[in-house]
Image (cartoon, rainbow, N blue to C red):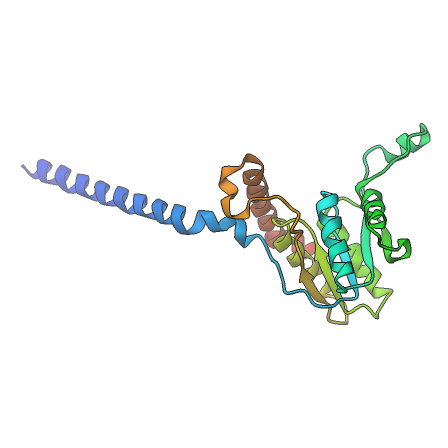
Length: 222
């Protein structure tokens, strides 16, 4: 008799736990999961700035955003950072004309009417957003008139990019205003990210990279 009561009590406890877990996952699905993509996007109210920094990655959606900002009078200078190109030297030595994303971005900006002298490429051979931030930090150190920058990147990358630049530039002896302007030409479906395989990969990867930044990489930017 006591065993039956015990089994009945245990069964009710298990059922209660299952109901609570079910409710939790339902709430998770309704309120949290749909917003995971949107949370990664930081779209600031942009103000007139000294330079527009275009982070490397996809080319045309980002440079289109930078050109729009230039044309709207937010800045008169677009800055790009040379990115690492696999087998670049070997290719050049064998007579291949190498066009990395950085050069392609500059060529696109010029094609869209930006004066060539207003599009600056910084040597950096960067492999990551951290490398780009460090290159910009050194550039600002040598150009102390710079007090504000606009960051142009993809939507999902925008939160992490701004955090990286805030950390990297915080060691300067001057305050730098950073405005995030993710490209409106980026086709990512931010509010329905779970419906597209590429968006799912982007979102998951960005959260992993954010965790890596907060727990490790930020300490390398001091």
